[in-house]
Image (cartoon, rainbow, N blue to C red; front, side, top):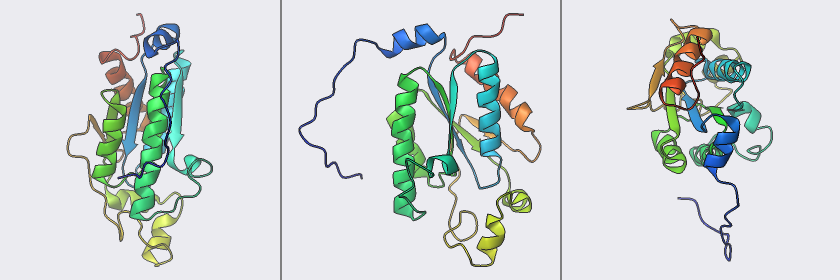
Length: 205
């Protein structure tokens, strides 16, 4: 539970609501939360989806785990407590993006189920959990950042999948296995979901 230190504050309602912003953008805000092991392909799919949506004329933005740790969350490490705070902050930022009417992709390992559930609670019914369910051996073979090699050598402690647990989602909206599905194919699947749920309009044939 995050300690509330701010006192004597009041929420100010503006003159523009979410509906007005969405009408302007001709889309609905949503938070697509990609979760999975390091090397599973989360960021690749998230950025591919962002690009595909922008190409179609939609406002989309990707909040990537490593990128966010260069700025907003650069004061956080990888302890369970810091991971929880990392996800809490992103959930709150994501909520703001959704309220702005933006289709937002977040790519975070987010290994603990409780943290992801809290993020869902913060965002509400605009939260779409995408479990990038790529097997550990496939992720480790890829090892794009060389992190698994360092973890196996004991150079990195508390690495998810090696000496720290990953708690898989129990009821994600989407499950993707990049061992047999390309980022482009996954993107097509996700765009169709956004269309079906009315976040974006179908392209006219």
